[in-house]
Image (tube, helix red, strand yellow):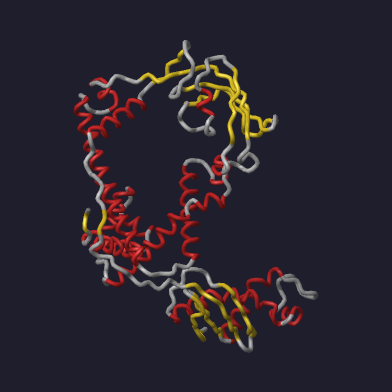
Length: 426
């Protein structure tokens, strides 16, 4: 098996010719025969007992060629790509096999998409804005209000109409052109008015009505809603059974004792501020890095193959589906609930995937330009960090994550440090 030729035919695209010797292909035909013989019936022979020669005499010499090609293809193509010194980013395509026989071996032509060429621009001495890292008193007060809200209780009200912020227990049934539609009916549904959980305009029309009152809600489905309902006008027949309002706890020392390990409200405030400062500092650091990396991307010249973006989108969708599965929900059910098809869902990852791929390419180019390396000590430190993060043993991390991937992560972090440490904060 050998590389016959390698020629660039387009941006990031090479055409390679690969050969397989007659001897190797003949052996592959024998392996294909051994694999298939038990399922082949030849008149005069018991099933699985016919020789390779007899089968080829009956069905033709090429009886096992297709299976033999599948056997030799992976190793032959991988070796040829390696010999050509190409870094591919997708599976080969446009396969053509002009020669395939035991006497001549195999000749294959195919195209491969390769890692793009990169011309780095400026990546040192860049300028970016650093967000505030100190929480204000207003930030602390807002968080305290959120805590009060989370620890509120619902109290039934009977002497007034529903208001935004109340929870109304309702029956509803939706109609389009006078016909009830699937999924448009609910009974004793606790709807928090102002939560935005229903169709735009629905909750505002529930507000103003009292318990036991029956009324119509008129809405128009959004244009991006589920097929069959998108953009259509609908009428919902509604009835309120009960209205409940939030009763917030008093903001005092007793509240602090109830919701935390602190004895006083001042101690709770101090802890909230400390945590918010830490969070703001981390957010500011990440935002600063992102601004700089976006500039590095804008400054570089690179034509990225579309397949790299597509592959990253698929990975992001798979990761999302896995996280849903951990919550007991499959992706198809989730999309049905959203009223969204899979293509539209995948499209939501497009911009993020493009940024991630471009950032990865830029950082890898910096690693090469700066000749960055990862020492054994740095790799061990990264493994220890991952072990602590995921509460696993270091040996488990080593088995789960390839060493070269950990080394690549260390080098990437070094590249980011070069960008950040040389940057000017505005």
